[in-house]
Length: 140
Ligand code: CMP
Image (cartoon, rainbow, N blue to C red; front, side, top):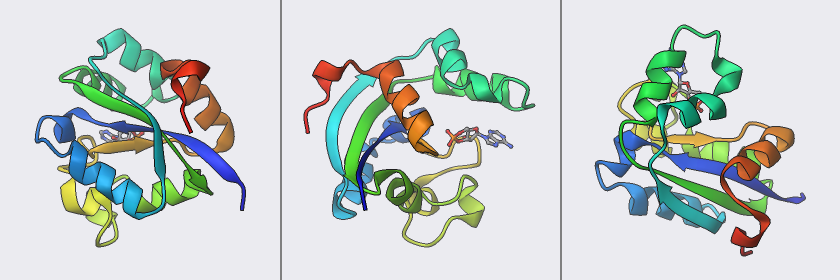
């Protein structure tokens, strides 16, 4: 399997509960390497641009408000099949459907406040990584 990179975001519900370290341990235990990471405060406009694909969804405004409500940790995870592996480690979007042991099963509060985001495909991973990081910031 090819080595990939994927964009991960530790969301406000998790950063405000001091869960960054516990979530990072889940990634590292699964064999994902954190090759870039920074804690930032998004504006609502920046969150809206990042989630533009969801613009027409009924939860878009609420999602953008939430993502700008407190700091997030944006990171790039690297590893074999990193995109799918990260989605396995995160669990289903709705924590009620997430498998035991996944980040969302253990930490997420609701479908909206679900602790983590992860890219869903190679093209979106490349776009999402470029939204937050320059090439110089990725240290494998
Ligand atoms: P994420 O993987 O970051 O991608 C889009 C986000 O929209 C998703 O996680 C959820 O947090 C959020 N989302 C999806 N469905 C709903 C919903 N029904 N209500 C609120 N937020 C949602």
